Length: 288
Image 1 (cartoon, rainbow, N blue to C red):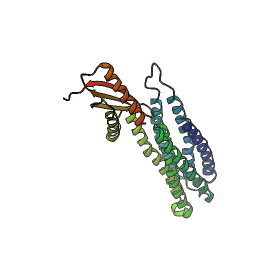
Image 2 (cartoon, rainbow, N blue to C red):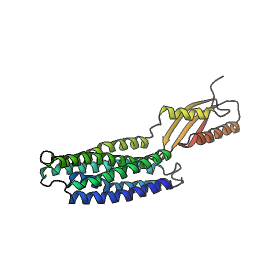
Image 3 (cartoon, rainbow, N blue to C red):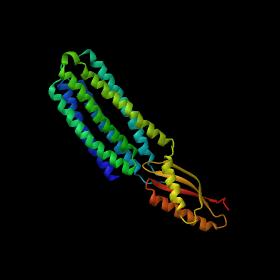
Image 4 (tube, rainbow, N blue to C red):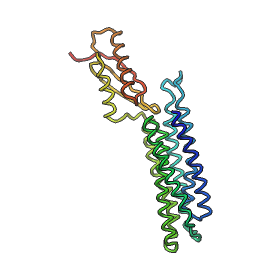
């Protein structure tokens, strides 16, 4: 968790610096696509700040009113971040199209360099954020990594459109503004995936069949476990909480069935790292 927080803070610093550089370059160099990419990076500072708050709040331990912990804050942060990026993309796209009527200024050739710097820096950030988000199962950090990936892609698009405008300003002068429009469109369309994924988590959507089969397999490896009637799981932050209906021999005592259930609970927690805890309900095995 501490590493995730450090990564989020580093993302805020890098995005802030890149945003300032590209906004100044876009204004001074008369490039709509560079300015649009700079506005996106500036918004990334707020996005990373949202991720940071989500990570800090979700790390709070469980209490009387939140027995499953505060992990849902992290999922909610990812959803809000996706919605924020969607609206940001619409604004950037609208601003790019609004400037089509004014192409009197040809972009300066040196404006390509801030874009190249941004592509490299955001690519590195995306790699580290995505790798760590997968290791801890963080929706918010993964959303932030996706945002950095969008920045890398939008940087390429802006660089291509700017290059076309510089190559033939008379015939392709509007390409720079179309580049700004495409940057916003990429952000809006791709951010919908983040919104959909986190919405599914908030609706308690189950993991895939292979993941659920893994829980059943580990539970059945415990001596005394004769069957698994039902098995559910829901994401409560970075990990899942599972509900498992375990079948045991009907003639054993309550104490013995309880001990089997406890061994199942501990083994699943040990061998399935993405499961935070398991609630085991004991039932009599219907077999003979």
